[in-house]
Amino acid sequence: MRILTLLAALLLPVCLKAQTGGSAIFRFLDLPSSARHAALGGNFISIRDNDLNTSFFNPAILNVDMDKQITFNYNPYFSGIKYGYTAYAHHIENIGTLSAGIQYVSYGKFDRTDETATDLGTFSGGDYALNVSMSRPVGIDSVLFVGASLKFIYSHIDTYSAFGIAADLGVNYYSPNRLTSAALVVRNAGRQLKSYTEKNNEPLPIEIEAGITQKLAKAPFRFTLTYRHIEKWDLSYIDNNSQETDPLTGEIKEPEKASFGNKLLRHLIISNEILISKNFHLRMAYNFQRRNEMKVESRPAMVGISFGLGLKISKFHLSYGRSLYHLAGGTNSLSISTYLNDFKRKPKATES
Image 1 (cartoon, rainbow, N blue to C red):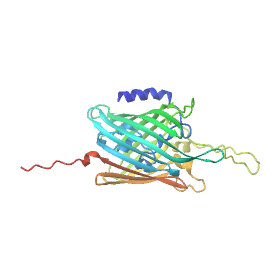
Image 2 (cartoon, one colour):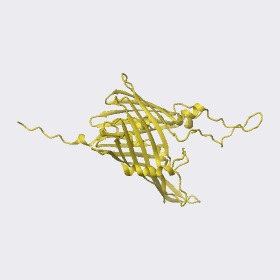
Image 3 (cartoon, one colour):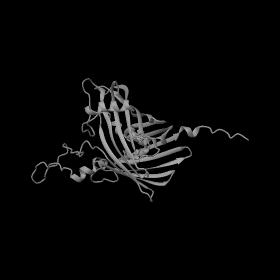
Image 4 (tube, rainbow, N blue to C red):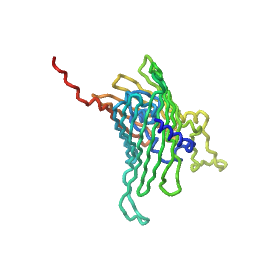
């Protein structure tokens, strides 16, 4: 734990810059790792239960209830892109809960041609990250937990490749009555060690997030509010290439700037889980930034909304999530988790 924290502390000062989409490398680190993340708006950091996938965006969520759990996630994305995440957790008494996981993105094969369109075969591309995480309570019987993750990143396309290293640092407060959970996390603090081309190092997608989850005492609802990009206030985007001209004067209209309320909402993801039973949950969320950036003004439809479900069948926890990114369509995500201890044979009772 001390090694991870020290390394993260060394990486953080050189990377704490306001980064948003299109201005950083290794953006695949922000993809929702599981069907539950996808169903709950793409990102949450404060839900604390026995789901190993929840620790992907906040290592402080790791806990003893995840001991010997293994999870597999598959997400068919747009244009034939596929990505997934696999992880395993192990708890060590008096030390903490550790996990190791692999995140990958496969961009498929591309046709290689020259300037005369001669077919020269194909090439491929992909991104990979090996995550090692640890979490532990602050003191005995504490309601405060701290965690850290170390990420080793590799990316390639054709003959070009890049390497990087990053760290996540998180803290989680979990109320004794288990109705409230709050968290703060710094994600992807690191640097690019090798760029695709010489002397062209790019920043990583560092992000500071806060979140709070509240379960109602006498109703099966668990609400979560996540505030993303604390490090940068204005997340609005103005397309300077789509200028409008006044039909009367011929003057170019200035792009309309986002209001204070619009800027605030772009940071927020609101989600809810309906805990119908211990083995069956419904999920839904609204991502304000996704809707603002991806909707078609004339037909916004349900862009920004996501939903899904989770259920337990025998020894397996299954989840499905659907995210609506655009009028043209959305994505589906599937997850399956289980405990390896559940497959151990129980010793036969001896006859007296």
